[in-house]
Image (cartoon, rainbow over all chains, first blue to last red):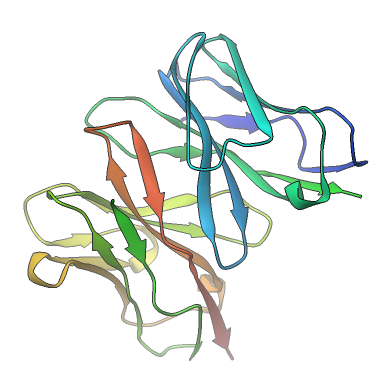
Length: 113
Length: 114
C-alpha cells in the first residue's frame, strides 16, 4: 500500500512565523502535490512537483513556496504565515502510470493566530 | 478550462435509503474521473475511478458511479446508505495530459439520519 505521511496533524502558528509542512511518501512516486482545502471551495492546488528539484505553480501559489530535495519528500513553506492561510493542507502523490489516481496523506490542520 | 461542479453542498438521507450525489464536469476530451471520500479529520480515500470502457463502475463500500458523456456527468450512487457513510464526498477530474494535476469539486457533505 502507498503510504503518504505528513509531519503534523495539527499545527498552531503565529502571524509572521515561517512554517514548514513536510510530506513523505514511500512508493517512489514521481509526482507530488500540495493542496489546501477550505469549506465550500474543495481542494485547490498550491504547487506540484514532477521530479526532484522540479516544481510547478498550481492555482494559488501566492504566499507559499516548496522544496523537493529528495524524491520521497516534498515540503510546503509559508514564508510569513498570515491568518488567511489557516486551512487544511493535504499532500498527495501520483505514480505517473496507468493508475492515475492520487494518493493522499491525512492532512495538516494549520491555524495561524 | 476544466472544472468540476457538485451542485449539492449538503445532503441528508435516512439510514437504509438510497443515495445519489451529483457531479458535472467541463473538459474538452474524455477525462479521467474519480470519486473520493473524506471522513472527519482524515485525508481523502479513493472510492472509484473511470478511465474508459464500461460506463458503470463499481467501487469500494458498495458505491457505484455512472459516466454519461452526453450529460458530462459522473454521479455517485449507493442503494442503501449506512451511518458510517456520513462524510464529505469529492468528485475530481484528472488532467494528466497537460500538467499532471487533478481538479476537484467543492464537495458534498453527507449526513445520515438514524
